[in-house]
Every structure is written in C-alpha cells, then in structure tokens.
Image 1 (cartoon, rainbow, N blue to C red):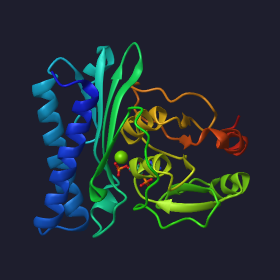
Image 2: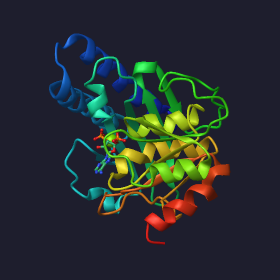
Image 3: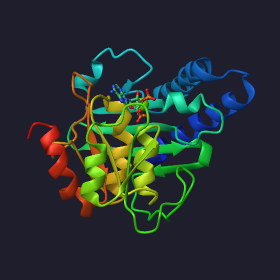
Length: 255
Ligand SMILES: Nc1ncnc2c1ncn2[C@@H]1O[C@H](COP(=O)(O)O)[C@@H](OP(=O)(O)O)[C@H]1O
Ligand SMILES: [Mg+2]
C-alpha cells in the first residue's frame, strides 16, 4: 500500500494537473473557473481517498463537514484550491493544492503542497529544497522578506518587516506563501484576521519538516481537527526570525 506521505503527494499533484487542464481548456475564467476547479479537484481528491483510505475521515474546504472527524483517529485535511482568486487569474503562479493527514495521537503526520503552475509538489520529508524562483522576483540581495496576503494583509505587516530589517511582499495563497519560505524566496509568512484549518495544515506539515518555525501569532502551537475549524492566524518563518516577529505579533495578539 502507498504510504500516507506518498499518497498525499500523488493526490495533490493529480489535482494540480486537473486544475491546469481546466484552466487551459474549459474556456472559463475568474470566479467561474475558480468554482469549477474547486469542485472538480475536490471530487478527485475525496474520490481517491474514499478508495485508498476508506476508514479515514476527511475535512475539506469544499465538502460539508459532518463532524464524524471529531471521533476519528485519522483525518485528511484538504484544500482543493488554495488561492482560488489567483487560480482564476491568467498566468498567476501563486495558488496551491493542499493535502494533509492529521492523527489523534501525533497531530499532522503527512502533508503535500502542490504548486501546479510551477510543476512542483513539496512533501513533509527531510529532502533539502534548493533555492528557487517563480513565485516572486529576485529579492534585493540580503534583504529579508515577509510575505503576506495581497487581499487581507495583517495590520502589523510593516512592523514585522521593520523588526526583521526587511520588506513586505504581497502574494496570494497560504500554500504558495508558505512554500515561498520553503523555497528561499522569502524568510517569513505572517497572517492574522481569518483563515481555516485547511488553509494551513498541509503548508505547516511541509514547512515544519523543512526546519521552519510554525505557530500562532501569540507564540502558541497550531492545533488541528478542532470542532470549530477557524484558525485565524499563523507565522511560518526561518527560526532565526521567530523572536523578532513574535515581539511584534504578541502585542497584536493581546499577549
Ligand atoms: N480574513 C480571512 N478570513 C477567512 N479566510 C481568509 C482570510 N484571509 C485569508 N483567508 C483564506 O486564506 C487563504 C489564503 O488567502 P490569501 O491568498 O489572502 O493569503 C485563502 O483560501 P482559499 O483561496 O482556499 O479560499 C483565503 O480564503
Ligand atoms: Mg485555502
């Protein structure tokens, strides 16, 4: 049987290829393209999970949450298209497919983030990631970058960049921003003000495996498979920036 990590990678990659095909060939654009992509990628991933892991529960952004996952020992946490707005915009590369696996005893135990427009899928393994470009233009040398949401940047973005001695860069998709840090295109990703478990579970599984610090803006751990799936804030950063970032964000978090 395929192991869980390999299956997460296979599903994220397959959904990404389907999404590229829909984007090229459906004649749809914008919102309609996003809706079609969300629905078809969700069908593919959940269909394969039902075949390959029939005993596991699933939490997906695009399917009803019947809460059976709350008593389950294993839950797949899926975002079929993260950065739906960017997926619907021609030539944008900052969108992703997220497939993670959570266990009641160990938390996140597998994760895959596909960046289909760049033809790459990252897993929560210990393979080193070579520095790459494709999500952002080359940074001014030596200037650390904090990536934030382009549509809903956190109020403290500028302050965080100042504390890092760096600059702010806006980008779509939680998965793409997290992978920008994994790829060395940025040093930190910070978010506040709203998000759900599927937006961060797979990116956090991958980022942790690659040695990045991941947590809430008050410094507490990110915890998954809660009854309420709202998980509004996070930091993913190179460990050497954690302290500087938390100094700013714990104030914003009321800490
Ligand atoms: N304030 C907020 N409330 C709810 N969800 C939010 C949010 N800000 C960002 N998100 C979600 O987080 C993901 C990344 O957002 P962004 O691109 O702005 O960084 C998006 O997921 P989806 O594209 O899967 O809906 C978006 O919907
Ligand atoms: Mg999302």
